[in-house]
Length: 92
Image 1 (tube, rainbow, N blue to C red):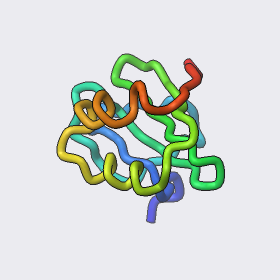
Image 2: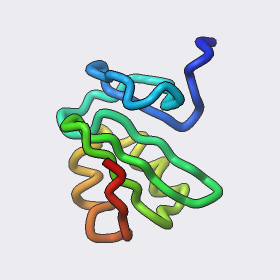
Image 3: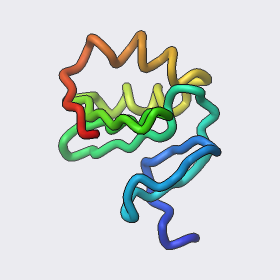
Image 4: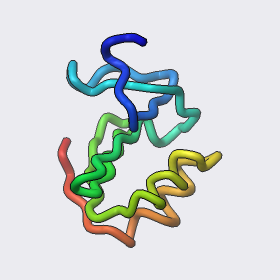
């Protein structure tokens, strides 16, 4: 396994690193979402947008993260199931 690969992070083929410790585990075909990362202890879903913006969505249950991870459209899932349902903080 590549040393930078980290469980719980999925990324689009157009990925460019945001910071060195932001590992990846797979490809994500999305025109909106570049990568997602989930921190289980805090239930925080980090979304890295193709635009470069980064948002943390708070208190996202693990089951919702898993549904997003397996969703065929990350952008639609984000707009219908995450935005407006969870508090967020803009990171970048």
